[in-house]
Image 1 (tube, rainbow, N blue to C red):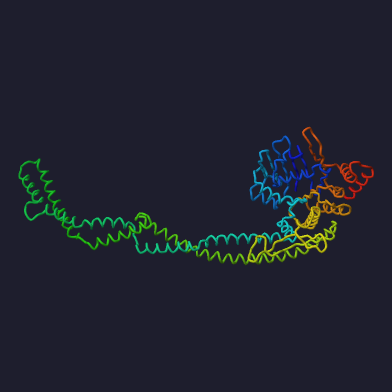
Image 2 (image 1 turned 90 degrees about the vertical axis):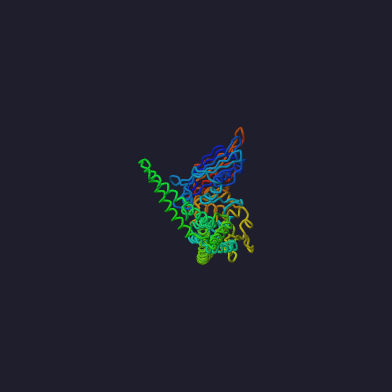
Length: 556
């Protein structure tokens, strides 16, 4: 509930600090005193649109703080916990600053936040009922929330939302996999063709380098063999005019000389002769085993041509072809897995849709049952509030066939008929401002035991009524205050007398213009304010006595 409100330099308020009690707080004051300014300031901390014209004259910025006490666990506490905004204790501070340059900043427990988050969180803390169109009762989501809370269906509705979320996630994944199916099919066919082509090539590791080396050898085989044969001839010919013969002759000549210094040279020549003989034998063996093979050369060149063609087609180096094979096979395997995933997701989607239909059907039946009782009780309260000809109805219109919604298979809307024989219509089209306020009150009183919003604000809920109906309104608001915190701006003494706390708004003047102030009233001051509301500015003994009697009776 709302515990404290601090307003600085907002409209006609220079500085204002207010504390609020639980139960019922009434706000009164002369017409034009600025009773609604306090609610406008509170609305800023709850995410209302900021307007620089609301900054007080002579000030550069307006600043508003509201402090709420929240229950843990609860919707508000859970919201804060999910966003890591929990502070010590069970209090939460909302802060809003607007400056002359048009900037607006919002804070939750000192952490900067968006206006959207302020509004979302504010809807969990407080429900403001005014004669203006932005009040929550005109929103269909409020109608659904109140009906579900009244029928004890909140958990069932939450379960349905969870199943719907899973359904949407599953449907989204399936759509991603199946979208562009023609493109994916074409891609798969291309990859399959490429994989077949590469499998037919069957290129082995390092094969290209080996083939290129062999191709060079085969292409030069004839010339190589000719040169090898010439080398053999030089080393070993049929006559004595060859390298081996000359080395042998040189060794023999030197070996005849009696000089020990020549012995190493003779040994080297003898060794050379042996090496030449061995080299000649190896060279002859090489020539015998290497023939000119045109068929093999053609095969190698054809094989290399196939390899080079595949590499050009894929714009890669021939050595990268094995990696390409792995990449294509991996992508083809992914396509195979995708087909399996599509089958699984399709099965899951059908199952989730069946689960949704079952839960939504049960929820719809329970809502219709709760709606009948809620319609009756609200209509009875409207009679008490002076709207005897009014009929309250709850429409549960089926949504379009085949369409699924997070909130069920029906659109929920509160309808009203204010006169006998009149066709029920939307609240904002049928009810006047004063009627809408009383309808709000009737609904809130009936749903007070189940509503999860802890604070309710009624701005001039009593417009257009008086007498006995005004007393009923006051009594109902006080009754509602037993279940929730009530803040009511009123101009009726019958309503003001019912308040547990009474705040009076007064307008004064300063050198630079008007200024308003708000003060809590003592019991004596409450009676005097009620007397003023009964009889005008001039209070008489009779009006004071009437006011005291009205106040005493209401407080009992």
